[in-house]
Amino acid sequence: MQITVKDLSILLNGEVVGNPDAILSTVAKIEEGKPEALSFLANPKYESYIYTTGSTAVLVNKTFEPSQELTTTLIKVDDAYSAFTFLLEQFAAAATQKTGIEPGSYISDNSTVGTNVYVASTAYIADGASVGNNTKIYPQVFVGDNAKIGNNCVLFAGVKIYNDCLIGDNCIIHAGTVIGSDGFGFAPQADRSYKKIPQTGNVIVENDVEIGSNCSIDRATMGSTIIRKGVKLDNLIQIAHNVEIGEHTVIAGQTGIAGSTKIGKHCIIAGQVGVVGHITVADGTTIGAQSGINSTIKAENQKWFGSPAFEYSDSLKSSVIYRKLPDLMKRLQELEKKMVELGIRN
Image 1 (cartoon, rainbow, N blue to C red):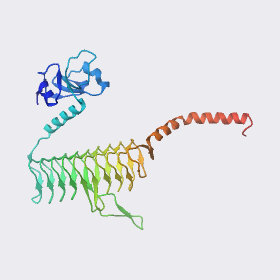
Image 2 (image 1 turned 135 degrees about the vertical axis):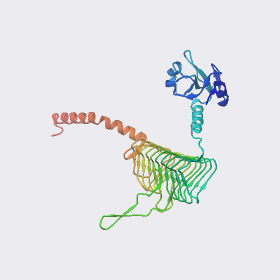
Image 3 (image 1 turned 180 degrees about the horizontal axis):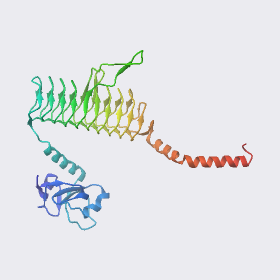
């Protein structure tokens, strides 16, 4: 797709400094610019690249004033980062505008498929399942019995949606993710073996959720495991049975959340965090990478770090003390030696 700088500036409600007739056909990082590419500059630490970039045009904030001569054209907008994100969304949407039912896919006669849907070869839609309008189903996707997929969703290759699970509108689920597999429930027996506890619930994923690749979200033992609207999950995340993730919470990769835990809304959980089961994490909580959460967090909008985790500012103070322990130990030994020399201590 090609567009002139002038037309793009009109679309973004921006102003042009340079050549309005220049042609744009792709996007690129500012340090990797090339002809007909559009880049953006929002972080001042990358400003040096704008004077050497090969990109034809660069999106900048209206407040930006160059300190050197430029060879690129500027498109000045209110928020360069947001404007560039909007354009990337348009590029991504154009790349996924497939429609139609490909040969080699299976759609049960008892299922319901909406309009303008794409179902790729080797996809499988089971009895009683439904797929909403404008949804894209890529190869090797499995949609189980009575599962419901909303409108405007994208299920990338290899996604598995088990029976009775519900996916809302405008959801994106990346390759290899499994939603609705059995929760980890086993009852210990007298002979020290384990008997499987049937997992009879489901998973509910509300609207506007994005789930990364190779995640596993377990169905509830009874009731539902719930991912609330606007949640964003990174790759390689484990969410156990009966967990609830609150609205607009963001969780980074390799995090694991044990069964029946309730995570509040607007939380930020960094990578490799472990959360024990049957606790509650308050709204607005931020948890640092590799932390271990082993008890309920009641106070809202606080930061936590460590394993076991505790309040963030205290954890920073503790880490400073920890680094000084060798020096403190040396000083203590010197003080003990002087006390012995003075006869204060044997």
